[in-house]
Image (cartoon, one colour):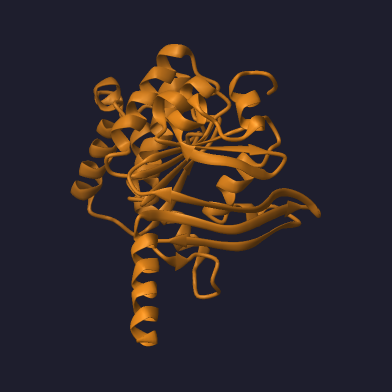
Length: 269
């Protein structure tokens, strides 16, 4: 009977984990012994958008970088805890961090197209680096990724032009297409529209709403209106702690923590 109970509990735990694409467990991250993220546990549902909000310096970007093991690339940076992708611990010694970073792509705050490459080559770069040589296949992937970010119609006749020749908003969408080309399972976005004008920002947000049909998206944003528009779930961080996490509507309309309420009401930032 005890064995049956243990088996039921184990099956229940496994079923619970399958609800989530990424689970961060007890993540603590530091720079030069300064703790930036403090024992944070958070679960990210598959094919949903989760926003991380909070004032500058609260640990949002550091937590994001822990999810794809970029934090450890910083000198004197340390991280403890686990990150599970489909139940697999990405910080285990058996994991190759390079392969892991292909599974969890990242888009940075400022657009960063490869400056010497064309629009086409920017998207194809990761494919070629991974050994793909079939031009017809590369062509198809490049086109598909540019279509996913609503950029194809704007650049299809200019694919040989430098990626840097595009506007800021177009460059950011190009970088997202580049991240999608290597077929990640999760897409991390660190303030992807912070340097863009309202029209370009709207295009990015429309694209996020479409991409979540296929990808798990985790976005850091200072823009609370943006978090409300694009995210299904929101986590509020403050001084390295995860103060509150829940459905976005609940966080903004009925926060359970007084500090969360003050932040979303604009009393501090």
